[in-house]
Image 1 (cartoon, one colour):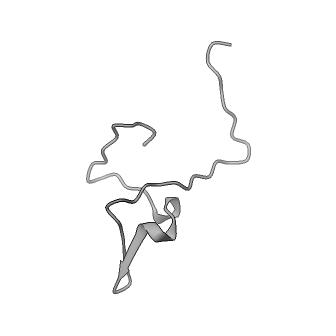
Image 2 (cartoon, one colour):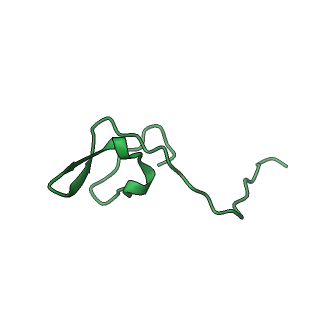
Image 3 (cartoon, rainbow, N blue to C red):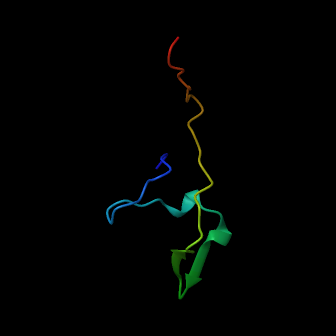
Length: 55
């Protein structure tokens, strides 16, 4: 997903945890993403370390 040209296949998806509530439409208790929805919420483990290449 960290690619500008990523297009999900029918077997790939993101859970609603990655979207703000205003990115979702809810009808009859069924949630669906708006066409303009962009995932903006990401959480990393506290022990996550960024590795820098070339050191």
